[in-house]
Image (cartoon, rainbow, N blue to C red; front, side, top):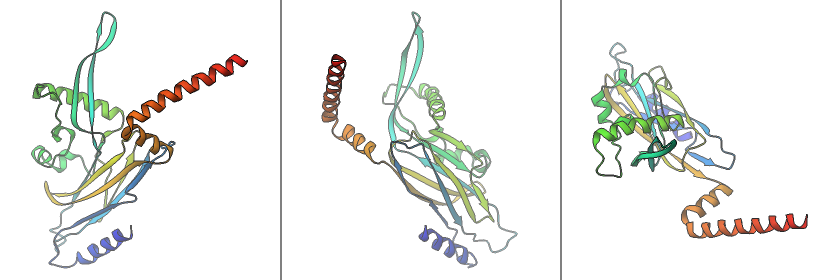
Length: 255
């Protein structure tokens, strides 16, 4: 936080210099999130500043800020259910190999008003431009486009993929801020935060930050045991279930 305030002061002071190149600096109220047993989500604040190079106020043009938060990629499955003989079953499945577990976009205006479709594709902004790929090499591009929309609907329903095109507030064409909301069902891992300064449909400057999301407390121990020592975790779970059943049977027998 102190480092950010010092940097902001330098930028705002140096913005009066005629030789300054345009710069962007941003930071988060916290770059670490701990998931405990009672974790219900967390709200963070992203804030920063951009410096203006034009000394003539009439020549200055407003900037737009776009923030992209991307979580770790996970194997995610999209399934299609159909009714067969009166029973709903999964008839088709697409396994995504590079779908982000979390993908939020925040901007100062609607993206269509800030960047062209070609520029959005070039900068890989929007789920349509992430280059999502299936684990099955035989899946056609047309099929993947259809299933991509299904994936988007499912992830949006879980608040894991979202777009808020009015979330970034810009003050005096220099300072900006945006609330960052992490839901309770986020996945532990490293989250990349891209902050883009856009003007006249062109990328002027970019900054990156990182949020580390990790388990804490008893939940962290169980999570680590299940993922790093899965065999022992399985044996412990079976032994615990057997012991619990035996204790319950003895207790009921005495009654």
